[in-house]
Length: 249
Image 1: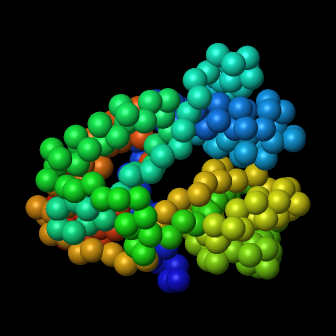
Image 2 (image 1 turned 180 degrees about the vertical axis):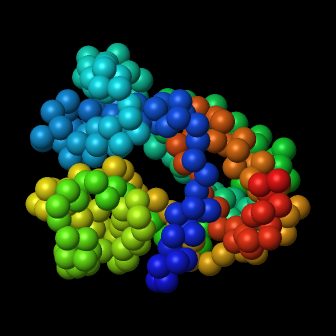
């Protein structure tokens, strides 16, 4: 993979929701982690990562503790993790990840959003050849403390990283899906805490889009992101710098 392209993928292939939505998403992740493995993060790696991500989003400690306590006490609803796949205008592939306590409601909402935007909802697995699930770790430069950046990068590659993107803010580390836990353990062994550690979907192939298509696709993505059940939305739209500039106007 080219490093510049990886950097662009981090920027353009996932649309981040508002901070309040991110708090809702991480709250659900904490709840699912607690119900799956208990409230002690030392014995529950999924919860440990969820707490780490919550801190990386500057989620208040009281909110984190309250979410754990609520889930441990059985007060939180049971969430099912579901995915939806389809094609937006221009043949752009769109992959939706959701966590819901009512799948009937969620699929009805997602289908409605696709329909309103001239998109078509497909069957599960229809985009398996387009998106690849990978681990992504974001590490701020300050987390290295006095560690040499070049040596740290080599440690990450030795630990199984596919690619490491560096800039003045820190590192974005990509690793295979199956290596998520191993990379997390490698960082712990190095004494470095990532700002975020997530499994994301990246396109293996992209679809070029003009300004009209781009606006239609982003309208769908934004509608999906407004839904409380939706955790993340990915697409494979490739935008030229000219189209990106038009979108920002």
